[in-house]
Image (cartoon, rainbow, N blue to C red; front, side, top):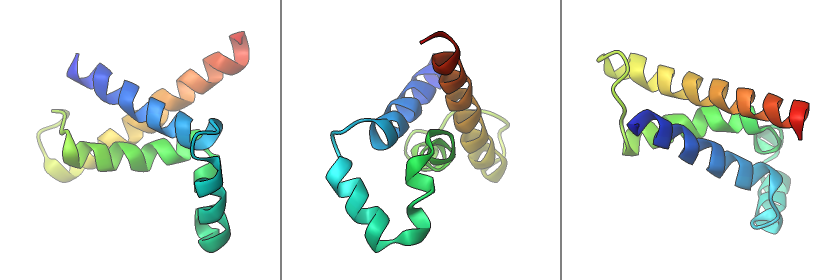
Length: 93
């Protein structure tokens, strides 16, 4: 259950940053000021990896028991789950 909550938080934050208009002006400003973040802030799957890593540091989930491996797995799991959700949205919505 803890892992599901983790993935829901990651997807929600990534989706809000990339697709919603709530922070649109701030995101566009960041894209102009920091060009290497432009692609990252435009890709839900890419952004979710980094959100997963940061969230893991705040809200750790037990994956392998080795901290560095868990950090990487949290990012990969977040990115993969977000990609699956995005593909389902494309296919059915």
